[in-house]
Image (tube, rainbow, N blue to C red; front, side, top):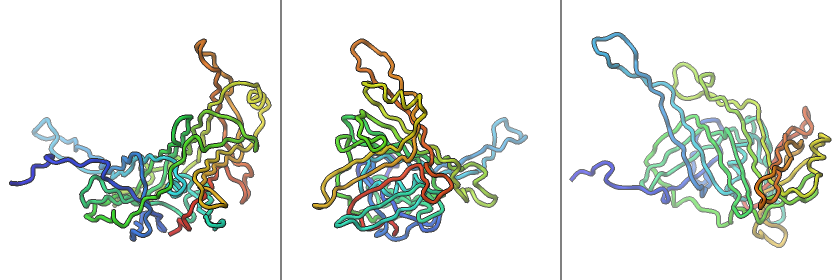
Length: 336
């Protein structure tokens, strides 16, 4: 008896996702040893092809012809912020380089913001959907927008909106060759927030990096249905915190139009006697805006939702930057 399509069922929990670095934009990293397994919360990568019905005069009122146009490959991957698994994804969101160096028995990885034209121009993914030996290869991937949120009582969550050049469905399976990290992701308990190197208490934060990638018709050319280039335009960083209102110091900073550097640092389990798993986020120069607390119900604590303008600290210099990540883990290199 022939198998009836739709008779069976695949479950998402049996799927896997792996990420790799591309040395050339749009070229798949061909070895499974160079791919790093992820434990995402969800992955919505999909392929769409624009179609158009041909409107022409004919003997029937209904259209009789149809053409295919643009192939679009995109989607969002969500994960908990992780000291090992998040490095390549963050590098894709910042569009810069990863500088790795040994630090005692651990390795430090500094992820710089850049223009998608340096060490890691793009990333690729292998995604098995369900249990069948069918993997989707997604190539030429760049992060259009990254959002990281952390709130009291929760794990730190990340989402990455990805745009790809192309996708291919292959009959392969290298799930046995992938290994999942045994290190736990970060929680709010492990976080510290500092403003101008002074610790302040916050109850939550939201950080968004928007690369404003150009993937419309201007990124395409005659003779192909996929994008040929995926340039990044102006990078826009949004950062806001939630904080209990107890003094007017934040309001004074707002009125004075003063600026400072802020840092979010998450410290996890011990690597050795000399260090722990870490993720440090530095915003080099921020200005405060909208710090006023609002009066809610009579049983509420006064809270301030403070937004910041994030700018480059030393423009037109090699040392200038707006955002930088520093990870500490046991992975020797991500430039493979």
